[in-house]
Length: 448
Picture 1: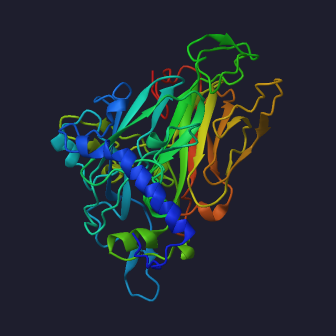
Picture 2 (picture 1 turned 180 degrees about the vertical axis):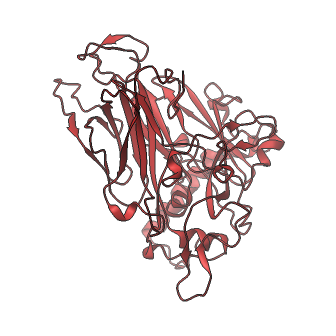
Picture 3 (picture 1 turned 135 degrees about the vertical axis):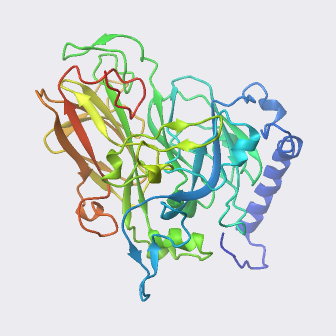
């Protein structure tokens, strides 16, 4: 992205880089030229033919696009000119983004038709412990910025002992150029909550929206265990053995931030000074309150490639994931919290205590001597790049009660400094027993 002027002297660092580049290039020569031109758009080495399938479990497309955010961010010193909403934005939308789109099951023509149609945040997915999982990444390029030829990768943040070629860290693995694809192979053995993001030009690409959520279900799932509260669970956050991480419902909350000037600069062929970073918006799952409690989108239409918006909310077409949490009296609810912002956050739940059972995809109970490090709290602290797994038990109610789950830093509860509540806040609605159907997927609130 930036033009860099380099010295003509060959110093020790440059010599090591040159040597590493030669070795990497030689190793990857077999990988790319043979396969990138194939109709399947899957780049793979012959040696990996047993693990890399032509049929991925998830197909992601990297591109740009637009989303909707309320409020205005004026350009300093101007008259009636704004970073937000962007004057280039199409009808109903306001803010330029980079991002990923779920294009699983689409034809090649429909895949490439999704250019300029990214979503925020990136698609949520989950994997069972020990399961082989394949993600195909296709780089569609940036329609608003054809001058940029940025490559993309998928980096599963926190994955233990990743194969370098599948790690997505651009200095030791393959980057995906425009018009090409790569299939990543994973077999995770550590349950918990993670995140993924593009690792090319990561300061820009992560902030511009190329981030998503992923979690690994423990091998213990599916085994009925009676917990200390007398209830039987067959879904768990970790391999606890005693039902202490059992839950009835689960919700993923991905915390991100947005600096309107940087997004405007990218759409207007400008270069932001990242040392001036000052976020205007704080988001949950790609939305700000009160949009966080709007319903989920209606999913991908594989016949047309259209990402269908939530009912009655066409402006949220490319922000499909709701943060609304609904449960019944006595339900244990697992919150999977992810922080991919540039700062620490304190997420608070007054009126109910949370039991923190995991952090950074690690169960807070020693696997060596059984020491219990889990703890109760009303406020969860998340540093940059951190994840937390916390469980609360819904109180007994005879009519629906609403609780707020929000960022305790109150300047993160506005939308660009505007009036009223906004930012990183959602609602927890506790219903009497018999209101909801069992949950089969995260972040859903099915009715009976």
